[in-house]
Image (cartoon, rainbow, N blue to C red; front, side, top):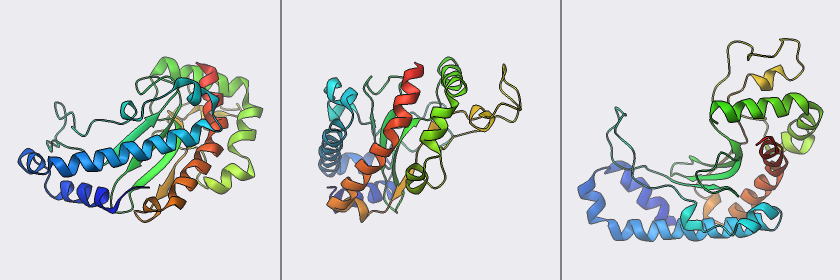
Length: 222
């Protein structure tokens, strides 16, 4: 499970987001990062029990997590560090376009887990839409099932929606609401206390297991 000190470090980092403070607290950062790596390792081991593609990939938890440093070159926000830990667990690796499982840890009950694709590149998004169009009955059976809707009441999420019908499709297409999406993923929020207990890991893995059919469907398109 995640330690309370990990959340405490991230909370303090948010209040002191500057290099001088970070350098003075680097030991606390290393402890928090290693705690998150260990937790991610446990998550990966749990996924391997129901997803053979992750088991076959032999993923290293250290290579699944994002850097704490922010890219501030083109951002108005010049704070140098992220105030969360993020992991992306994909059979193709962190930089793969494949649908993946993801996990973000952030204090203040801002943590979440889920899976899918967030903002795929246009060529990949085209393939996802095409697969949904061709296999809409299967897609609908996955994302509109009772089990899926119970765990994810808001259904499939998308970062943005097209205002117009995507090129090559008609408004009458039964899948049109999904074809207008610019991404496809599940989302479950977690409190700080959720993730500081064994029950949190169990719940994350249950969410991932329910998301696996969506991930498999999307990855088939690639």
